[in-house]
Length: 89
Image (cartoon, rainbow, N blue to C red; front, side):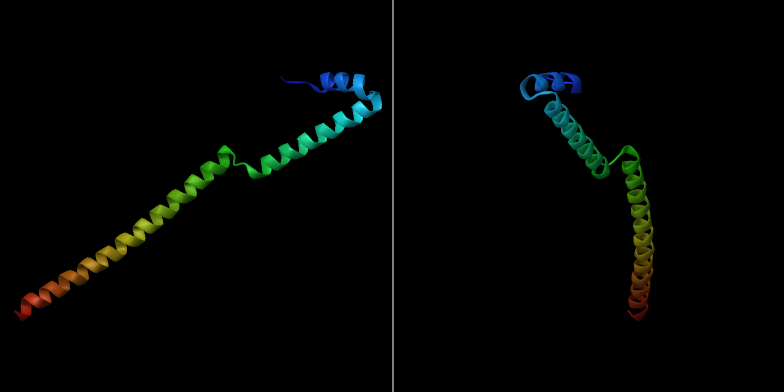
């Protein structure tokens, strides 16, 4: 059941009185606003996720390039060792 501020005020006014009901509704509103602000600071937006995806892809590309460079160096070294062994035999 969704209760608007006005409905909540009317319900509380009957039981608590006008001033107390108004104070309680303002308190609840303030707490909800604080909770929403906290959630907005914590939760990731679509833009945050897109930036993270871009960073991850860039990092993966850099690592792949670095790995390929070292693999080529290793292959050249292995070929040199194989040719040296063949020449000695």
